[in-house]
Image (tube, rainbow, N blue to C red; front, side, top):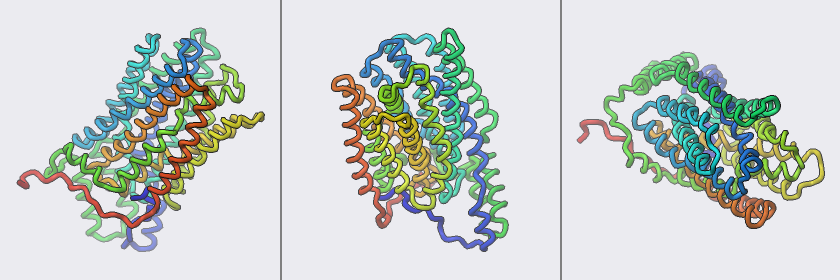
Length: 461
């Protein structure tokens, strides 16, 4: 019941040169292609995200409670849909199809923002957009996880998150440039965002390999890194390729009860529970940027660049922090990231009169994401069986996203009733307590052997 505290690979029978080649194995090509899709999609999404808080609060006159409700919808709907997307991807054994549907739905919602002016309309559009995110997240992460050895999961997710964050960095910059030159700035941002989102869908459809192509790439990678291994190992690899290629003749579709059986895994329950607990006190990015603008006196024109600061730090740290988590333990890195977020809360409460305040807060905010966003799904490689990987990722992601949905609602209500300082102080105290509980629950223990029964082969009855 721990967060894959050490992800050392199993004992190897290869020669020493073969082990050295395996240790330096390159990241699978599908990781880079999916990273490119995420990069393009994040440019589109973050263009909207960067201007949406200011647009709603200052242009449309939304109260913090109304904005918190919309922000909660923005994060909560994807949480509910993640379970559906993850289960369907495992059931039909086509992660690319489910991810593509999710990306396409989000792209279709971007032009609708041009027509939304009320809280009901905006809520509907944002809910549909987050439905797309929920459908694609678990299948996409499953493709990354299944193409990567367990001991390299942190690095692979770090590479993907770095590329994803490059888009998150370019999106606010694009929004800033559009607002500075366009007459109808917000409408121009929404329109350009829609065009970029369509490009991301096209890259996914054209360049993300199918199941059979991924399996062939896995066989080629295995041949490159394990050419000196035994013939039995090669035969086993070929068998895995045939199974992954989609025949799965002796395996029926994954059923709901197979997915529910994952909850019998103590380590998965601990991981999902702690992700939810910490999510309850993780203030959404939009509120962090609004608080930072107030504390540092940042002009409205510079507000869209605040997410850029977080993205730059995330981009710089994602890969090295992911690799560090593979070496020293994902639990340690995961909890350290939340400690950095707690320090950022303290700085916003203290609000020292120094020009360095925005840089310090954004640096800690980016470090938090680098230490948690890719490390959390990487921890599932040794917990969830491959045929249920997308479902396992969805369970943990849903628990975290639902908790953040509740945090957005409660933080917006607390800000409206008692002010932003009281709301942030409550979140800081809550985060400290929740982090202490998570450190206890996720402490290294002797593994508890609980297995998930694989779907029975056809004709077994």
